[in-house]
Image (cartoon, rainbow, N blue to C red; front, side, top):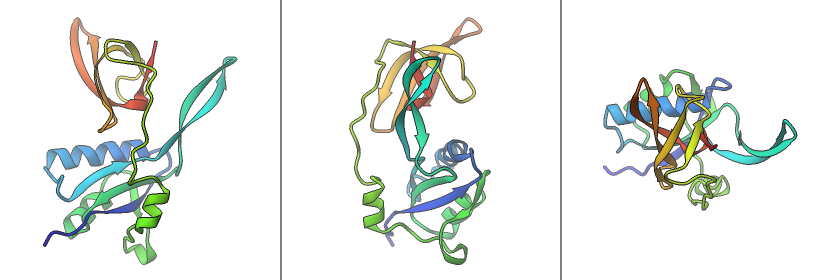
Length: 173
């Protein structure tokens, strides 16, 4: 019974997209559900923004209020996602989750990986721009483009503390 994992659209409270994605990834990790829930994405684009007279790229959510989840739909996976804090439900008729078609997933770029260009590298000092360590400065230890994560060593209380962040949660100093 090897069911195929499909992309589903999950509706969240506005502004909770990243929190929902992080919570789901944590639940999947803790309960070892990688075979049911494969990927969680908050589609974003980088747009130029003028701030303090300087133009810089900022992350903007493509679909505010929505998170995309690639999962095998079972009662267990439905229950986990549906009851994740911040989730209001799945997108689909009469709350029956409807997966994205291959064409829709293709249009959203879910099946393709765009090459990412980062403005920081291993060994660089970065400032953390989101999450519990927001405002802290750390040194980039490792960059995983595949998982879209960056590992940063943050010095706090006289100790080096490792932190794993999304690529967009750190900016060069």
